[in-house]
Image (cartoon, rainbow, N blue to C red; front, side):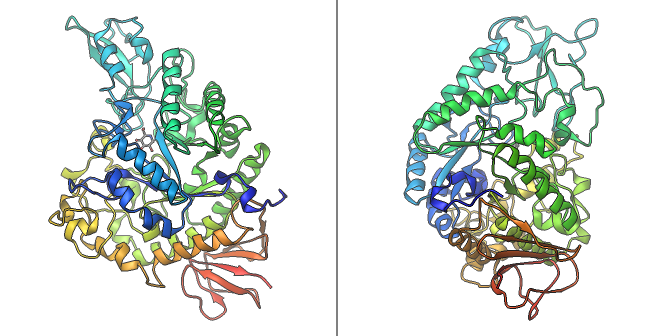
Length: 559
Ligand code: NOJ
């Protein structure tokens, strides 16, 4: 077992709890119905009280918002809807004043089609240096009328778009693994590589503690852009190793370079990979000693609420990452997947494809009470495991998926690109409820006349039931449970990075100990008797005397 270091001697990112802020939906300071930088700043005291160690802010750069910021038009400027660079700088400083680290989202796989380089490429001729920064190719077929290969976009439809050349004729095709408005950069091009070093430095110079790297397994494409041999529309990102545009060896050279840049700055600057690759041994490659710090554990996130499956994902990750000396980064929610309250109740498997409408399950069968119970138990499981954790805004409120967004209000590009068969990811992105009263979209907006259905995505009528105000100070609320869990996590030297041992407690129970006689029990079946003479530190739901009921987790001090 790895020896346990005192917390102050560990690198912060080895066991930080990082709170993901989906900026558009967090807090709206200027009353336009969209979240912004100043909104985040106004809520720093809330985040401090919650007890998280770091925040990650989803893309705040200038963007036409086709994919809500993941289509970046200028990587070194703030989206005017969200604020200014001066405000961003003030936020970075004040976040640090609160003792919280700050990560920004870096989107290196693609730009917006409005990025100046792409606009220049459209105007330039085939074969020009401007086009070489992206993947422009001639089409197949007699007149180039067929796309250069059979790749499909993650959002639906072909991954290629044909352009009209300067002379008005139909011309070359460009690659877009995501939306048509998100052309993929060509990472074989030195301009692209150099540009992103400048982008890294731009934000590091402004004091950010690190980066969440979007599609971290995607930048390098297999030489010659060969066809996908076996197209499997269901596997998408998780079957990464079979796709010529995911998890190519060449991507690691980029991270070795970036790591040098990160290490050239004072403090422990870091990067976390959004790499939908599996199995865990492939993830470990991103976390080798000279590459990145963290990588989201998407196998864990993709597991159903079943003890055997969760245990397998935990073991596999710990084992694979031990090989490279990296901590695991647990996560159950983010802005791309159906919220865990719904997933754990409906038995949905999360993954990049999990947002398809048919996989969101039958709303008539959804049991909010059971889903909430499970999501709360899952949180205590996650926060007791070795390593760090990522919490998505609203998770601390046990916010469910919003299923009632009218079709004409859906904004995710998946909706249109799937020809209206996939409602997309809007359901987990609805603005947060801060107040129980509907005024100002349940306190999301500073403009009190803003109604819940006037926020950029309409809030459900019952959103106020989940509001921060309603949960604050209520000992039984999910918010209070998170605050208590994070406070205990800070106190317990045995939590976070360090060893764990499984405790045998039956097939329907996950139980493990951490240093300091700490134990976590999660019960998935009939009620069980807890170890005698143990002290209860925290539970995700009331215990039945000395018994742990189903779908409940408890933190204990063993005798
Ligand atoms: C992953 C992001 O999390 C997702 O929201 C986005 O649509 C794609 N990458 C494309 O940038």
